[in-house]
Length: 85
Image (tube, rainbow, N blue to C red; front, side, top):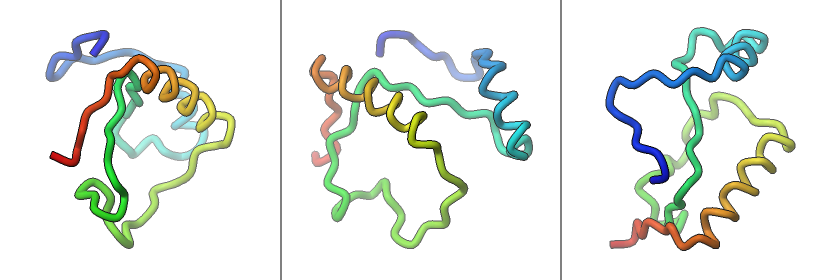
């Protein structure tokens, strides 16, 4: 990873927390997305995707596109974590 995150470390992203409050998500734990490597996995054989799992919500297309751009950068950099082994 490009930055080490220590257990229990708090990283402030107040704009994200404000967004959660506006949408009534204040009761959920504060979360963030770190995209500096990617998992290589096959969905049909994945242990990380729960079939029939309940969705908690949806992200906007604009937000998903930002994540996709960051993922593309991680993919071209070769920071792949193989989940097939």
